[in-house]
Amino acid sequence: MKLDWKTFFLVAGLANFSGSLFAILFPNFFLSQQFTELFVQDSVFMLMHYTFWSFVFVMGIGCVLLWKNQIENRGIALLGGLGKGSAVVCWAIWSMQYQAGWILWGGMVWDGVLGLLFLYWYFRISNKS
Image (cartoon, rainbow, N blue to C red; front, side, top):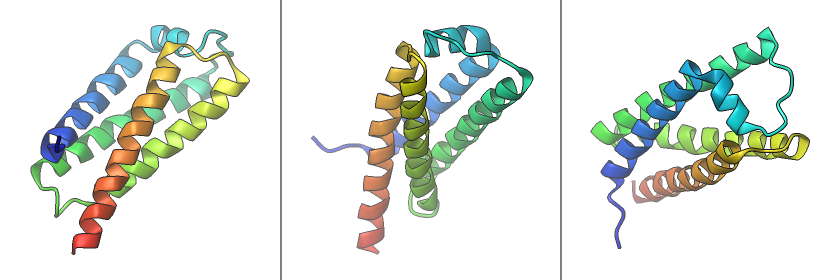
């Protein structure tokens, strides 16, 4: 089975949009599902939460740019793969410090797979040119 990369980038972008908007609009619910033991939600922590999910939204825009023109915007795939990998590492550390809820575990798997696919596509395209 051959992966339709154009569709892949569109789905990844839509997932970034929906996940980030959900996290931004419903932070308390989102965080209660992300951690079973929630640490203190002070203003600095909430600012970090909003900043992270705003960045995820922006990366969704990058995915849409990849969907529209893969070759011209291929550097976005490298950034997306590295960004998703860094999120997985951060979430893995958090899961060791706090009890991870289903959103955190799901996010690690989802972003880990997507990050690897982004990097695979980027290096495959880069080796062809």
